[in-house]
Length: 358
Image (cartoon, rainbow, N blue to C red):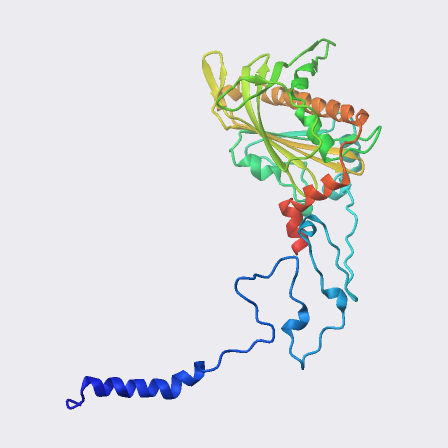
């Protein structure tokens, strides 16, 4: 190997290249229809399918499979048909009260359909009595118990339809009238009445607590929403509430909590984020189902000096009457719920998408 010179090695490599490599590039690749580089394929002139097939490969017989799309087609809904493939979408049927609460007795059902509805309260370690079916998709109890409440109140009432059937956008608009809460009052046994909340108003944000008016009725349903509200309680004073709305497959959920401490005079009686008032609303065949679960934490020495059940129950009664009144207002208003809005809301709903994909 030491006797090899560099020119001899270079000559040997050049011979190997000429014998084996160069013949591979000797002839250019012949195309029947060469496409010049400077002439790109226009989008409006697609290559025919026959150019991609050899002479021995027949073109498909179903000519309708070849679809030429224009730029306008991308904003158009297309329905494709194929023999032997039929997709049928069942109509969306509202549930009944018995579907959601199948364990009710006849008396409980009658009370739920009444003007007052069902009520039940229990303290930590107690057992709820108004329990939705496990497969109903409704689980307010676990959300309320996350805040470790000392006292919990359940409420259920079904507001029957009068003028027309109500739907999601009606519920949303009824709950949007925050200023109407202050119009509700509590009636005492002697016949006298008083307003529990002297003022209820929306706030711009949690940081900028400037009062703002309620918005006009919505024509489309948001998939989620957050609003900040100040309740002026006749006994406690200002309560600052954050309400988070979310849409599920069957109904709407409003989850409310206090984003600031609750004070009585100069004393703090409740820390921020310790109130949990969750209201679930669903259009059922009998009417609008309103199911509420509220949890509040108060220290033991305060609970001993307050009739907490009556105080919380009065405030829940005000909220339920406010919702009922708002639904009655919606019944007399023209329906703003269009089919297009219904489809768009469901297709963007996470639970509904999982239902379709499964």
